[in-house]
Amino acid sequence: MVLIEKINDGIKEAMRSRDPIRLSTLRMLKSKIMAVDARAALPDTEVIKIFKTYSGSLHEALEYAQTANRIDAIDQLKKEIIIVQEFLPKTLSLEETKSIVNQAIINSGAKTKKDLGLVMKAIMILNNTVDGKVAKDLAAELLLD
Image (tube, rainbow, N blue to C red; front, side, top):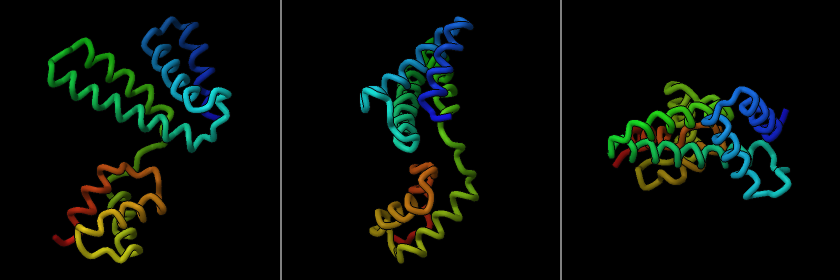
C-alpha cells in the first residue's frame, strides 16, 4: 500500500475514533502532499522527503515551545511527531550510521573538513535514510581539521 493510501485510511480511522490530534496531523500530511501534486500521485520516495521536512519543522517548533515553556504546545507537538514518525522509514542506529559515514569517507576520498560536502553527497548515495545531522556530526569528527 502506498503512503497516500495509508494516510487516507488513517484519516478515516481517526474520524471514527474521534482522535482530533491524529486527524489534524494526518490531514496536514495529506495537505503537504497535495501542495506538491494536486492528484497526490507522488512516489513514496518524494512523499517521505516531504514528511522528513515536516518532521524537522515539528522538531523545531518543539524546541521553541520548550524554550518558551509552553507545556500545552509541547505535549501536542510530541504527539504529532510520533504520528509523523509512523510514516517515515526506521532511522539507523549509531553504529550503522558510523559504518555508512566511514564508507562514504573512503568512497569520496575526503581528507579534511573542507571535504565534508563530498562526504555528505556520498552518504546520501549510499543510504538516504541516514539522519543527516548525525551523519554530518560523525563525519566532522572523523575528518581532520
